[in-house]
Amino acid sequence: EPEVTQTPSHQVTQMGQEVILRCVPISNHLYFYWYRQILGQKVEFLVSFYNNEISEKSEIFDDQFSVERPDGSNFTLKIRSTKLEDSAMYFCASSRDTGELFFGEGSRLTVL
Amino acid sequence: QKEVEQDPGPLSVPEGAIVSLNCTYSNSAFQYFMWYRQYSRKGPELLMYTYSSGNKEDGRFTAQVDKSSKYISLFIRDSQPSDSATYLCAMRKGEGSNYKLTFGKGTLLTVNP
Image 1: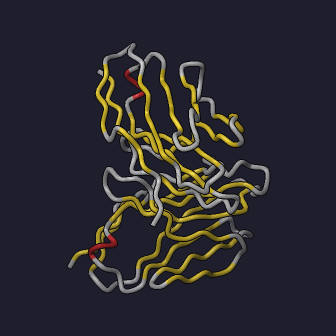
Image 2: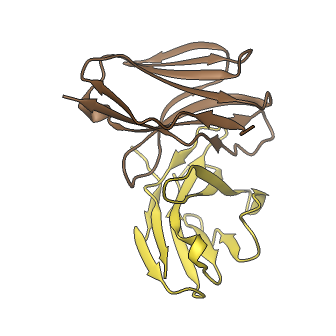
Image 3: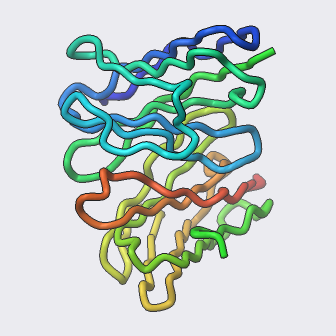
């Protein structure tokens, strides 16, 4: 069964460092997303990406965040200068035009 | 009022019980409703995806939507210990919404053998 894969599964970084989280969406999907979940809180939307551009972003997704689809398979989330409050699980998701979102296993980011 | 409200539980039931999980929402623009299952420190797994009011059944799972009351439910029949997880409701607006989901906080379910 096709699935969304994410790397790394866990990353520890120092405050102020840049982090890149990587995702390989399901191959025939057209829409890509990043969500995050701070421990004990709800899953929150960060950004959606379609046709090689951002289609929607939340208030959380400020200038410190960026997304990229550098080739035909990968989808990345970059945090330029991490803060303590960026510590969370980051989930990549993808969907076709049906709107059913399929999530990866997540990348746990710990900022020290 | 929060857009999506979900009782966080925890909910503990014996094996074989019928489980009822619920969410309410305030925004009538939500048109599509989903239930996800999330095991500890894992990604959400899509269980059910519904649009119209009424019931949708898939194996031991039944999703129910009442748009007039802004209330959705997930029923699990013959619950198993492997059903122990956090259940998240999620919803999105209609076409042109980029399929952005708004989640409830999740209900932690434990099914005891």
